[in-house]
Length: 154
Image (cartoon, rainbow, N blue to C red; front, side, top):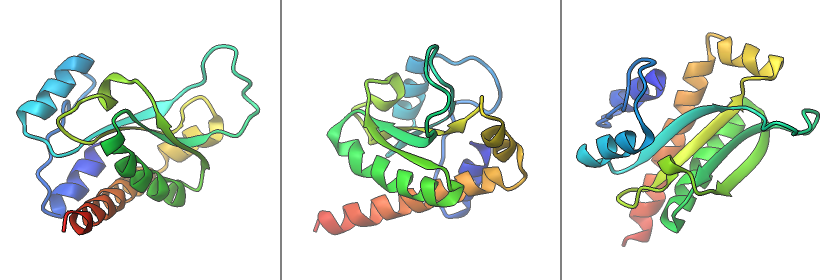
């Protein structure tokens, strides 16, 4: 998240992070922080895990969740970039009723970039270039989403 914020800020984007450490901030509080900041987009970054009883031998990779239809193109744009950057299985874009994907004031997405429980994913997450890969993918996805929205509004 810090790498994403730093890259976006270096490109002139005003970024508000809901937290800068491992402190516990409730989901609704995170949404309020974004709304109070007047955010135009909300991006929630996560690492995934399998639910109990899930077959661990399937294809798992990266996926992006959205709730409102106006967030779908945003999710698609970022997901494409994540798959290309991480070279993981494309789990796709999901409509999902998740708290951090539900805000109505701005397009909101929740990214599950990789699975913390798989050794190869964990090694990738611990690599030096992983934060930069995520940051670049999110930046490109945001940029492409904004550019498409500008074209559609004319």
